[in-house]
Amino acid sequence: MNIEELKKGNPVIEDIAACREVFWNNPDCACKGCACGGSGQVEQPAGQADQPSGQADQKLVDIDEAEARLIRFAPFIEKVYPEVLDGIIESDLTEIPDMKEALAADTGGVLDPVRIQGRLFLKCDSHLPISGSVKARGGIYEVLKFAEKVAMDNGMLSEEDDYSILAEPRFRELFGRYSVAVGSTGNLGLSIGIMSAKLGFQVTVHMSADARQWKKDMLRSKGVIVKEYPDDYEAAVAQGRREAEADPNCHFVDDENSLDLFAGYSVAGKRLKQQLEARGVTIDEEHRLYVYLPCGVGGAPGGVTYGIKEYFGDKAYCYFAEPTHAPCMMLGLASGLHNRISVKDIGIDGITEADGLAVGRASALVADAMQTRLCGCFTVNDSRLYPILAMLEDTEDLFIEPSACAGFEGLKHICGGEADCPAPDENSVHIVWATGGNMVPENERESYYIKGCKALEAAE
Ligand SMILES: *Cc1c(COP(=O)(O)O)cnc(C)c1O
Image 1 (cartoon, rainbow, N blue to C red):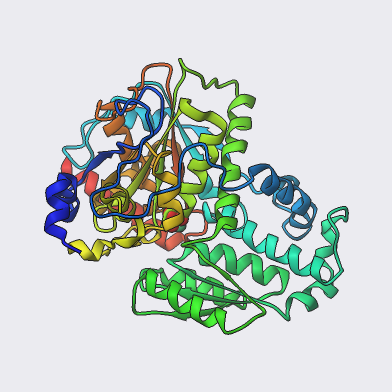
Image 2: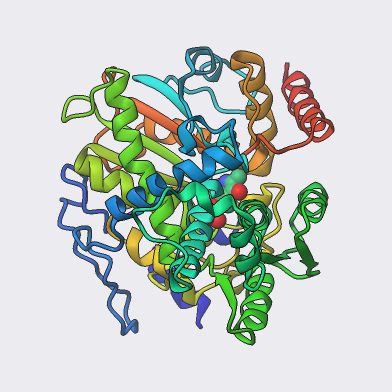
């Protein structure tokens, strides 16, 4: 790959390679009203043979089918996790006016002050039940789907049954003959590990070097086999895939290519629509929706964006946040090379304190699906994450993990007029997607918070 050539035809690659904070408008975004003209026409850079197929109208997954499956499982979830209301794994949408105000303040350059036009909400996937991160959507969905298939193939379950029977010992015994494996930076491992172990599957989580120690400890305490790699996420996934292939009774959850994960995430779009309606928040031509989602390999924000675009269409504008040291989706989309380029190819180390986002190569499936659906991407310095974390704790009494703070940085770009998509106004609705936090142990929370406070104080 000729990187110099790539940079020449695409100046943003130069900024990405220098690990600068970058805001990038996706020229292929198919929203009506975007400066790109809404053509959604995808121009491939010279020398790229294969055409992306991710046109905005192409159906990738069936959201209704996925939701129906989650509803079938609700009696089981309710039985084994009584704290999950009605057995439906969903999070609150919380308006955060005090945070909105705090974000406008001068922090001496620690954060750039931003005057937000419209209302600001936090989508609290940080507090999703069972595994405390956005991965509870896709990860748990995929494990449940696998369990359903195994039970049905063995003639022990039909769609009409009350799925709470799955908690009976005969099912644990059945599932104990099967295994589940996954490669993860941490949170996907938690979701897959916790739910698989609960059902009775043997489960192995291949953890990358970025994964925090407490996540490994927690999984081991639940009987999950945790294998650690000195290498990055890509290596952990590759090893997991290899080991799983050798075992016909092993289901490998493929974070880079799974349509089941994607489907589980996408249900969020439908639920968000219901949630906004229930609160009387209108989304239409005059009340536009802006959504900011932290991105690692792309599955979670990609699936959520897919769902949002299915239910809100051109009235919703979605943007991905990535660390300056691991901007795989921005690089993949801006270069047109999707998963055929890694941040390492342009000299970036992929090392970031945003452990959930420490991914060097984007998912091909997601990059393809985002080509015309995503409005843009931006990168965030690690130094921004802790002050945001502390500010949110101080103003709204909400804790989210560092990775989950990245979305907030999108507000300054969009409200600062950098977007090609229509600018927000006083009628707009902004949703920052908080992707994780509830499982973080108290001592870790405290140290993140103190770090954020110190950064803010030092600037005063
Ligand atoms: C995994 C994760 C993301 C991003 O999800 P991907 O599917 O890897 O893009 C964002 N935030 C947190 C906290 C995560 O754990």
